[in-house]
Length: 279
Image (tube, rainbow, N blue to C red; front, top):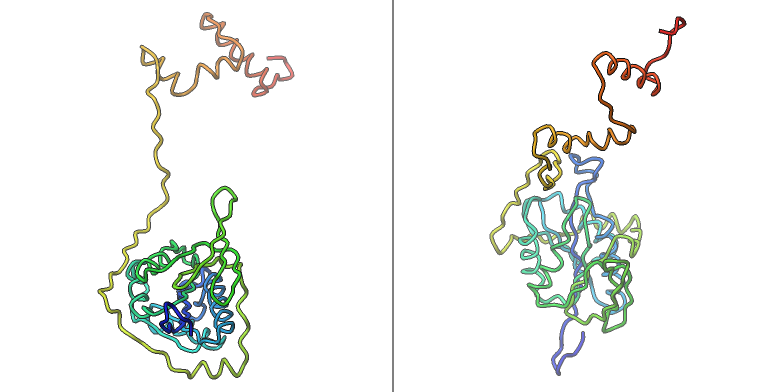
């Protein structure tokens, strides 16, 4: 419990987890689970819960297969698990709305930065916007006190930014920031039978549309070739003038002499060899 302006505020810690397929086995749900970034987020949520003496709520959005990540969180020490029923192709804005609707009283929300399925990392800031909370995104180092979290986040150009966060706040962390604790056998067995609160999305869910096509680089805009005559423009396009200059000379000869000059040049460049008769 914490006090704000003489009013008791219940501290609630939430870990947002995403159920993603393993890149090596995208069609096999047995290999699906949490990404390293979400594991780091869960570990920080558990550490903060132990420090403040409060339970941690794990929440995810997805079908029944997503219960796996919630049971993993329960085995590691989470006290409650919530799954918002929705398809795996739900748009990021709708995922954030669905989560925020069920954690409106959350004081600390921990999220992974990017997931294994090339996620955009847009869900944490959308959650912060819904909750009206502070946000620290792309965090690479965390220091906790009883009232604040000092987060170091990565910036472009090798720079860093240090933020002192106060509740309510949303923090998204990178995958290498913390190693998730190992759950014991008894905890795994209890988690396999623990109840999971399955709730509907309170707002309409839209399926994200994906289009897969071969990669094609963007065309470059180039100036028109210079030259008054078509042959001049062709030489400019093919860089024939530069190639001729690189070879060293341009000559004007009669047909017979030109043919002999070409043969001699090919011999000089190693494309033709002289036979035993010297022909």
